[in-house]
Length: 237
Image (cartoon, rainbow, N blue to C red; front, side, top):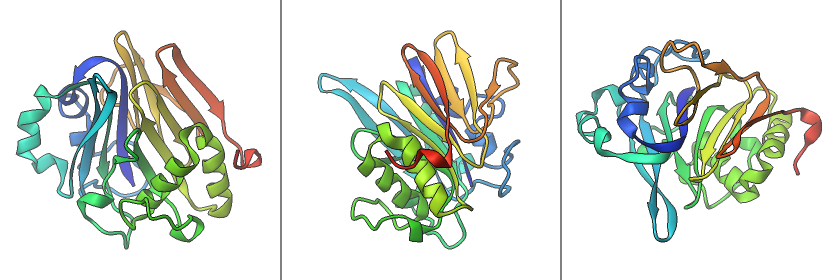
């Protein structure tokens, strides 16, 4: 399993989301509080953020196959990185999956950044040359990108029907939207005055964190947060 986090709101430093909180992703890499599967997230980490320019929001990534707790270079640079939209993750690799940078979230299609917290049988996923890695999460990301994030709910329910043991918590962003699913693991929301955090688990003890029920689709935009139940009967749309 993994832990991931998304941000949409005002420009903030990456450090303030990932490294500085009492129980942020750095701590979750070695001591997660709500992780149901696995004890450590030591198989890599990645941070993606959107850079505003004349051409619109451009996704940038910094990924590593080493544990986040030991990366002193990122520790020194993260306070200088600022963005209005961030997707970050620490990885606990599925048994048998490669441990390398290309297998580490967030994945991208050039417009979206996407993280998968869970596991899925690769046999139920279509073969695609667009995947960044042969790992299950990268193949799942490529499938979602191909079908489009507007169809995320249907894609997840279809894959879950094909693999009943799958855990399919997705978190994705394109600079103006955050979308996420809960399917087999935890997700929480923190609505701050300057934006919204979606995270596998709260990064501090703020009482304003809200737990998202299992099998739900979450969408965050500038107008607010919407939750939609997911069900096998939806199918692919």
